[in-house]
Length: 359
Ligand SMILES: Nc1nc2c(c(=O)[nH]1)N[C@H]1C(S)=C(S)[C@@H](COP(=O)(O)O)O[C@H]1N2
Ligand SMILES: [Mo]
Image 1 (cartoon, helix red, strand yellow):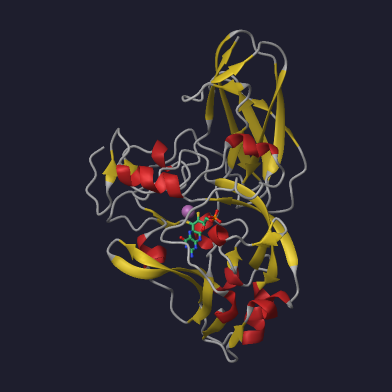
Image 2 (cartoon, rainbow, N blue to C red):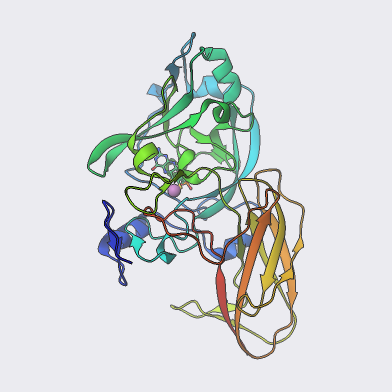
């Protein structure tokens, strides 16, 4: 495909730039799908600029803009507020990017930009209420402490949410993950958690929150995270996670190709599935590369925003097999065989394929 674009595209070979990004921002080893809660360190990471070094003694969160009572809170003051925890599946909007052709030059995820952690913090909605959002407010902007250049524009990492989304009761200002203080890479001392939305919304290293009377037009809001088919296409903003099912690759891998080897005889296939639009209601499994499908058994979901475990009995004979799974959610979204290409390489939820040699 010939593309005229402000974006850069890779062809067959991966570049030094992509290698450097992949080495900084690691994915989730797929065998980690076995844990209900992703152990810290195995959760994926995506950091655009540098991890800010925050001295918490001087740190405060400012909530201002179009409000009647601006507030400024220390971490201790935030921790004295009501405390809740929620298990959330997080996925980068660029998950699957390197499977597009041509491939936009950015973090070259294959399909491993996922994690499922338990985040603890204080709900955002009551804080907005206390600050007194004034009439005429339309969005809430979340600004991080990290700065850099992207598209030759210097900016702090910041993104906004429509006011009604920002007021949803499940949004959290999180200061702990999996029962521990937020580590630097996940946003110490405070990050936003927006259950159901793709990763870019969950602003880390929060510095300020500002209520706006006009839609935010910053770089990470307008120049990134739209599914455009060309630079002239306005496209759609990337918001909630589309359904995805991931399988724990069965058997043992070879190194370095990671092809799978399984012994003939009964084996259980298992994985996890999620969607940000509505809970997952169905997972189907194919053991013949997508020719025929069977329903997997579903465990109870982990809350409204966690993932759902599935399992499926398989009794393979010796030979070559291609395993596929796909999820459908309660809003009727399911995983298409192929996802429409877009300039930023977003939302590629085409099904994972696992190639297995049964011996
Ligand atoms: N301040 C800030 N917040 C950020 C980012 C960033 O670069 N800076 N990256 C975003 C993106 S694109 C993703 S996918 C998630 C990743 O969160 P994690 O590293 O905790 O998994 O953080 C989001 N929040
Ligand atoms: Mo991301």
